[in-house]
Length: 274
Image (cartoon, rainbow, N blue to C red; front, side, top):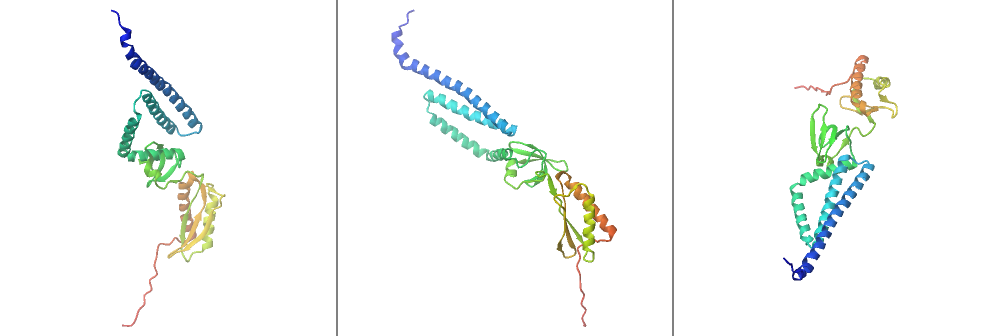
């Protein structure tokens, strides 16, 4: 059967060839664009690794960048086909707004997680106080942070609660000051009490000589003379050293006759003739 090419030549020239060229160009844009996007993401990840960013953040940011670049490539391919991308972008924007409103708490936790990973107010193994919780940081996740308390409880805290509040990192510095307030009676000898404390501090090898410890009268209280005792220790020795100091001071005061008074009131009775 003979096919009359001339009969369809107009359709071929008007539709087939232009659309064929557009389709081939769109496919080329998509394929080449995907390759360039993967290349950009690969280079970006190498840069972030060299900058010593957290691996979780590196992978996550890489995925986000790749998704954005893929959307750009798809839109460019659709434009080549003559599709009105303005309406497509409007649909994406509306969908993004709806998703953002539905998951605003999750997005807040996500953004806070990125800030925690980027600015590093703490790292794994640090003992911190944040969001009303004290514990050791075990894992920093995108949406929440895992902490272990001193009594071995596992607590999961939303990142937004941590980053939006005050963070106290007790492990950030190599050294830490032990702050003790020791009360003695008004009838006791201040010099003798200070000498006893100085002797205890000098015998404890965990206490640092630089900065030098401070022992001074802090306040004349209602029922005691308060002496501030402020030696420095390595952060890892803080709690055992503090406990040992309190015990040693109490035992030495008992042995030397220095009292640690209870709260007390003086009552003066005035009698009058009926």
